[in-house]
Amino acid sequence: MLYSYETIDIKPKLNKKKVILLILIVLTIIAVSVYAGIYFSKKNKENQIAKEQEEITRIKIEEENKIKEEQRKEQERLKNSVPFTEEQIEKIENIYHLPEGKNAFLTFDDGPTQSVTPLILDLLKQENIKATFFVLGNRAKANPELIKREFDEGHYIANHGYSHKYSAIYQNTQTVLDEYNYTESCIQEALENPDYHSRLFRFPGGSVGGYYHSIKKEAIETLKEQGIAYLDWNSLSKDAEGAKTKEDLFQNVVDTVGEKQNVVILMHDAADKILTYETLPDVIQYLRDNGYQFKTIYDIL
Image (cartoon, rainbow, N blue to C red; front, side):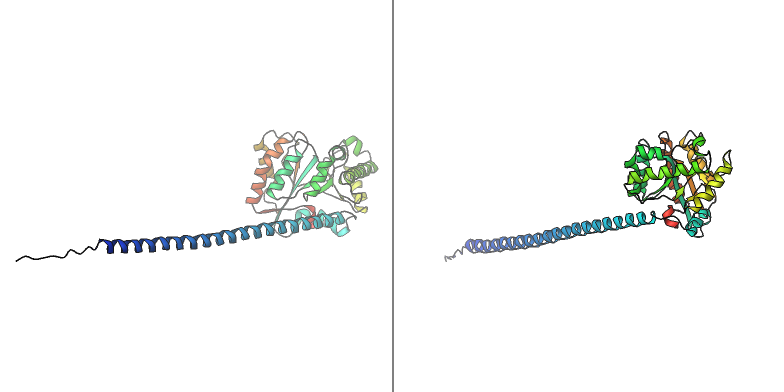
């Protein structure tokens, strides 16, 4: 008996299913790709908008800060246009006894100079610290752009006399006033502001002791009558007294700061005081580590 088998060809059906499946896969991929493209395009656009908004905000903040800085400068100019009151002079006289916190006043004498002052200003700007510069009239006259920079960057510009020659300054009370007034005119000229008055004097060599003590004592009272205060120091690096290394300068500051709550630190930005600049970062870090806040005269008036 012969059997006849009918051969069924299922290959075309299988191929057709594969084709349909393949088409579905391709369509899915295309759909996913299109969706992803739309999604990421939208995301990129959102990111771009966010970046643009951030930039607008940054520019706005910068403009606001610029306006605030101009207002601050104007306020300081106004502050420095009138003599100190008796109350303000008393506050400066009591600077070593401020009741709140630990306060450090960085002060620099004998500048400005091209070799050292800009370096100190750069560092202070980087550290966001304001200082007090007791400038010499002859150097203010020679470097007016540095006086202007000190003022523009928020530092207090004070008066250290014109010549720093004791024999010229301390002939009598009037010669002290002459040196003070001439230096004031040099500062005013540098700032292009005839209304600026530092109202703060540091006697070359300090106000106490020495051969000229009696003249200094009389000058203090005369200055006070005119609304002008004076300021010495209670800590120093001895950068003008023979200290020859960074380590010596730093240790002198540490030793003279001691356990004091309020310190006025004497340093110099004369042309040969590069060691002062090199030591300053360590001094700043030491004071910060020991809880001091940096201030200028503006902060206590």
